[in-house]
Amino acid sequence: MKILIASLIMVSLTQAKELNTQMQDFMNTLRVEAKKQNPNFKDFDYKRGEKIFTTEYIGKKGQLISCVACHTNDLSKDGLNEHTNKVIKPLSPSANADRFTTVKEVKKWLRRNFKDVYVRAGTAEEKGDVVTYIISKK
Ligand code: HEC
View (cartoon, rainbow, N blue to C red):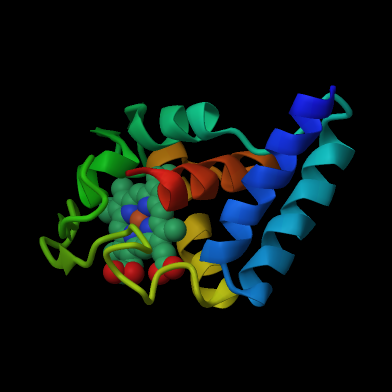
């Protein structure tokens, strides 16, 4: 139990270093919501986030698509928008300091991009999982 608590604290410390207060508040709001929707929810999970990010699904345009399709699997590199052919700057905050700094932007794009791929809005748990994956992926 002690080890579990220590590792939980470490996880929150690493996150705290990477996200600004505004974004940390957003993640905590998602945590509270996720817990309300699923009493067994413990915390956001990298592996679940990876699955959300890499799974192909029949998207909004009726074709198989995943988050990877536009953002690539190397989040430190430019991506390419499948729909518009425009270059997308790297999604990883370690490669692109603007990422995950403005809650409004993050909310807007998560809403849109979940609809692009999964044809519905993401749940609080899914949004938190996928953000956890993106910001910690090396
Ligand atoms: C059809 C192409 C496309 C797909 C598919 C896509 N995205 Fe995006 N995403 C974009 C574009 C375009 C932007 C906004 C331009 C930019 O920020 O460079 C963006 C921005 C984002 C941002 C904003 C980050 C920030 O702080 O600026 C996040 C987070 C994100 N996408 C996550 C996802 C996730 C998670 C998925 C899968 C559910 C996904 N994207 C699928 C095109 C896509």
